[in-house]
Image (cartoon, rainbow, N blue to C red; front, side):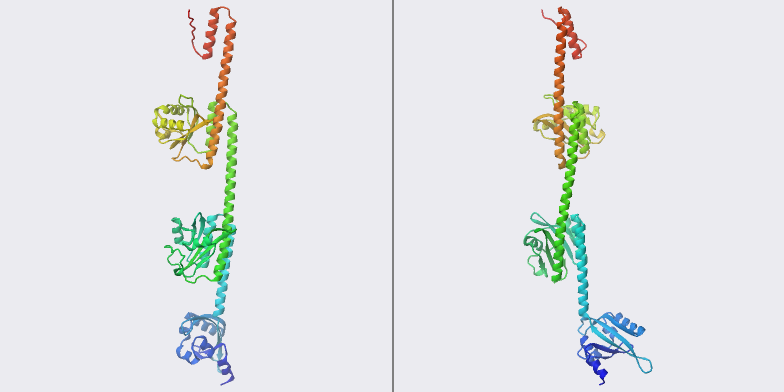
Amino acid sequence: MTDYQAIFQNSPVGLFQSSPTGQYLTVNQALAELYGYDSPTQLHTELTNIGRQLYVDSARGAEFAHACAQTGSVRNFESQVFRRDGSIIWIAESAHRVYNEAGQLAYYEGVVQDITAQKALSQASQQRSERLQTAAEVARAASSILDTPSLIERSVNLIKEQFDYYYVGMFLVEAEWAVLKAGTGEAGQRQLDRGHRLKLGGGSMIGWSVEHRQAKIALDVGAEAVHFKNPDLPHTRSEMALPLMSRDEVMGALTIQSVQAQAFSDEDIMLLQTMADQLANAIKNAQLFEHAALAQQNAEARLAESEALQQLSRSLAATLDLTEIGTIFGQGCLNQLKQAHILVALLDPPNLPQAISGVGVSAEQLTQWQTSLTSQPARSLALARMMKTGQPAELDSPMASLTGSDYSAWPEPVAQARLLPISLRQQLIGLIEFGFPSAQPPWPKSLHWLLQAFIDQLALALDNAKRYQASQRARYRADLLKKITTRVRAETNVEPILQTAVAEISQALGGQAAFITLKE
């Protein structure tokens, strides 16, 4: 054996010589063992065609031979090959042409190295890099999205797509339940549509994780006692439930499921738990932002309502005319609420309420409303109910409640009406009718206090106006009595006295004639 042959056969690296057509001519022991054969002889016996029997992708073998033929040499050509037992390994080949003395191609000579471990390390590194990128993307989404539903939906889809999991869902705690807020794919949508939730506690991995504030991992759900078998996810083999913790508060849990058993490595668990912690903080921040924004909106709404109340108060204080007071009130309500019309009426027991003004109605319609108080049973019953209880009363069929003209002929069609009392010092002094263009009065709870404040201001303004009118009438009567007394005292005869008294009384009362009868 020549020195070259000795070195060739004893090299720890796989070496070969192959014909120009692709058959191995000579291989060393290292290459035979690399492919799973006991000896070069066994390899020669069983492996007759490299391209068809060795390469996982036969085209790769042809590509290697073609590259060597074209360039004269190939360095570090990577491919997957079969070993004798059917397993697959990665190899790196380097080869060059060898010529005979006549200058003709004699054979190819090359080196083969097993790079399976390096490839696995490279793939693991690449996978780790991709997952770290996913974690970074989730962190960016968490820091940039302040809308909680959008943040949750974006996060679960990112994790599923980048980690290639079967299903990812996120639950948030509501009272004694973990409620699904986002889930990937059609299965997630079906669960969301039916309001999927899990009881906190040991009945499910999510419930257990939230209650115990710990991750719960099942690498084989078939052997896991605490596992909720979800009919929407029949192919789950591994599941991980990770608690969402922020500032020592459990906000919910993240479920991650795979169709493979043993799907989660320690590194996966650590990375996903880190992402869950980031998401928990981001969700908490988003919720705080939403609460702050809502508080600001409420404060701005309260400020606007307070300004509206102040404006109404100033406007009502500027007049003592009852009709004008009712009109100012009605216009103020229309600016804040959506009504078709507003009517204001005063009670003068034992008489019926007297309409003093309306917004969105004509004088004729005010007259029709007054007539309807006695001609329409539904309105009479609603009025009686309101006067008895002091509580608002609904008009069930307002469109048929007016004599001569129903609500459908009004400037804005009315679908429903409501009577509200005007009370002062626990006494009912009037009522307001609100007509609505839709079947349900659009009164948000946030405006209830404002409406009541408006009505309280109206009651005070009406009371002041009535007191002013009463004082004016009293003053007028006193002035009239003084005038008549002065004129009468200026006369000395009975007849002129009587004539003066009759004339003054007739003029004061607006009568066309007056008589005085003396009893003899």
